[in-house]
Length: 359
Image (tube, rainbow, N blue to C red; front, side, top):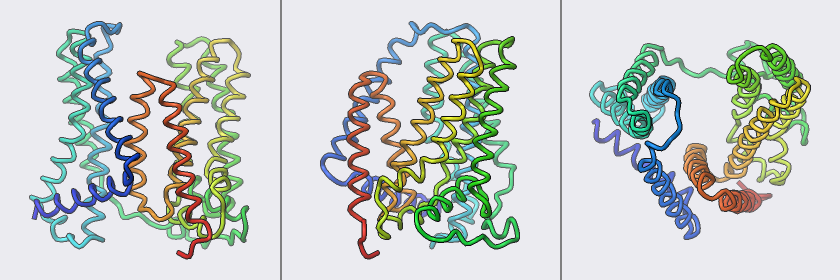
């Protein structure tokens, strides 16, 4: 049973790779990303001892807590879904198969975590970083394992009331996107404005309050409200967005719809950072611009790839491409910018090819 469950997931993985990287250009890009990533890791490993890090930096290994928590949570949720909706429900409920599934998931995630911890231990000559990473990962996974996995409920079941009719046309599409992003079925636009206003107020308050605080704490407090809004705005209705080209909506309209909330968040947080005072906020402003731009571009890429594709395949492809582009940006920033523009153009053509097509 255990092997059958793993083979099922491996087949889905191969299908996701095949769906995302079909043509020769896509395969060449994947190979190029793998070569660059390998070269970057090799360079980091050889120059680890030359990194200028504070002696206390080995505590960064404790960041393995959220990694372990996330992997355990996602794997458990996936097993719960398989037990309810897949043809291998019996396998997903069998104890030995579940344990092997979780072990493989943690093994895949632990390789990069402990590679980073090894680089940290080598740079600082502190083997304790590895022990901290192992303990932190175990704590994160253990805390997630004791949390119950609840079945997802619809918004109507949560609030006990039917959704208001969004109407028709472009404004209705935007309302549907905001419903998903804000988690509110009624008055989603109002809730979105409240989120943006809260982002502005909290960022400005953090900037004023943090003038007497350490720079790191001040920056973190100013960035936190935007991070919350961006994480909310990353929630997209894949099936609705995938249907829009069939209904005649253009890629530009779809991009504008998914970007409205994060763009408003950027305007609010940037204005707050400027009003907060000192020139040190220029660094915060740059981080805000880059962070929001990254979320906006990923959201647009997802929306453009959803037509005719499975959401899981789209998200997996973009995770690979984002990781590769980050590695390229470290070594050759101009090449990363050119690669980003090329991929977005390909995604736009994919979306446009489904316009007015009979689903």
